[in-house]
Image (cartoon, rainbow, N blue to C red; front, side, top):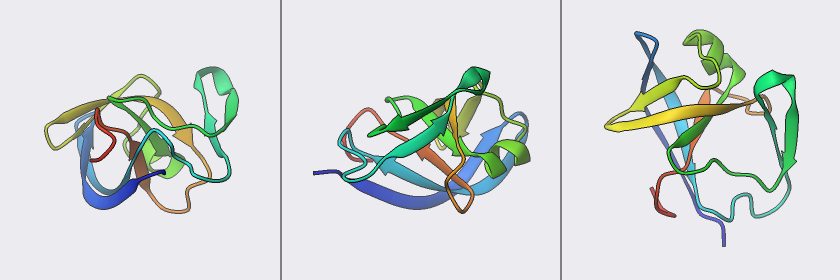
Length: 104
């Protein structure tokens, strides 16, 4: 079973801050369908994908607002997350992350 929690919080990066919506997901995300992400070097990857612990995916609007590039660090509360991918199919500003446990 795939688990997910969605919540709003501030995100800090590159000396800037903004409110974002987060989705913390378990290892079995997504339960159905595929996720398409943008990789460094303009490549794409699709499949039953989820961020690794300590990493984040963000949508293009949030990346542009905070001037983010793959490899940058995001601060969410006490967590430091490394941006590893951009997700272009999210319809609102959202950061995607997975914590070290299956529940966030």
